[in-house]
Length: 591
Image 1 (cartoon, one colour):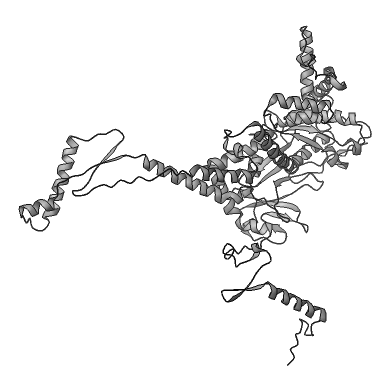
Image 2 (cartoon, rainbow, N blue to C red; image 1 turned 135 degrees about the vertical axis):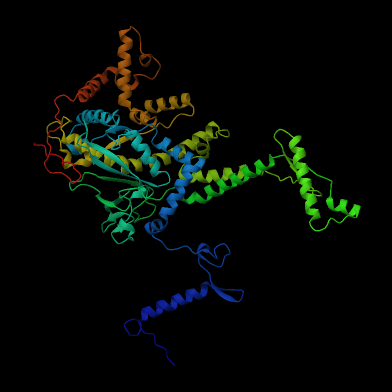
């Protein structure tokens, strides 16, 4: 009898398809093995098998990056926020990350691309100096107009955003709003809690809507749905709890509106997952273990004293051959209790810090001696803390502030290794969060004509990317051995292996601002007939044709001119065309 296998088109399978099927069947037979009389298919990789006891019950779902997050995000974030509120290590870890990545804020080092803007290098530097002066006015304004809530300067905005991005939420949101009543710059940042970004009315994800983010065919975000009130804001008359607002990612002419910073773990993700998520179990277990050991230690610290009463009413009645009738024994116990209460009330037993308990007649107290705290407690907790620190990008010493086992070599190696992680995090966060804010603000600066452009310079709207090139100077790396590392920095400068800009930035400083300050100090010293320490013959200052301190005078004059903003017009070039949020489109400057 011949069996003929037909395909989906009701026709016999082609010869090549039959051969491929036979080959696969042969491979399956080779991979099969007999275990306890049953045929079990062995995977080529043991990690994909089900016959090993460690993998027998491990059935991981096949999720995309975003679908896995959408299903679990709400519970995951709520638990992580609870950890941040109530667990010391969770709160400390986030604070250490923010301190090392943001510090006291970032300094702007504008870098307009002179090669594509029709500028010379010197012209680009002069414009950069103007931009940096205006940025300081904007971000360090004592009235805090850069913050829509008027409670933070730009350093505070950055710190809050970083706390969301590197903490429980795993992402940070902001909306760049327009405030017409602002005295200098109308661009302002409004921080948005990530919990407010969600699908309207709780609808399910669809092809072009993922967890509150509207996307296009490539998965690029085009807009965001924000709930008008945080889902946890439950108070009388809160009508915004079930209302959503759709905000486009940018205006029609490209000005950023929504800022969203997160690190996609897999392609296709539209929301961020916290780096703390994989270690939640370790955090919970170590916290529970600490609670149990603390309770055990408290129990061991309690000393109890007992009074054993030798008087037994049953023995007394038997000895007297007395029969008090029904309830006699209960009456005797009651009378004894009343007598004890009256006696100890009149002459109480008082031992400082000791609780005295009176036992019933015939009872004895057996005291146990549990061996707590456990000798392995510290080892277990330290192992858990090392796992936590490694997962979030810190060293054990940074997380715990325990430097007792650190020497110079180990500290130096750890600092170099961990600094690479901080640099990567800072660079990514700057590109996603700080760069859009800077781009929106710089558009307003050009629109108001606050920058003096040389003839032939490319207008901002023609190449905003080139105008927005910038470096962000964050907190300094710090020195473990200041003398040795300062000598090494000087050696690198002497051998032309680095630049003053790079060395200053690694310590969180702006070399141009330092040069201005040095020049001011040198002029003051000379006015008093003194020699400035930087001008003394110390083998470093002024070598290799470095610029003299007086060269900073020109930059100082430019900065003073910028701060005075003489000749500039705030309303110049204002276009009548505007965005629904009230943002005016950048004016087209005549050339």
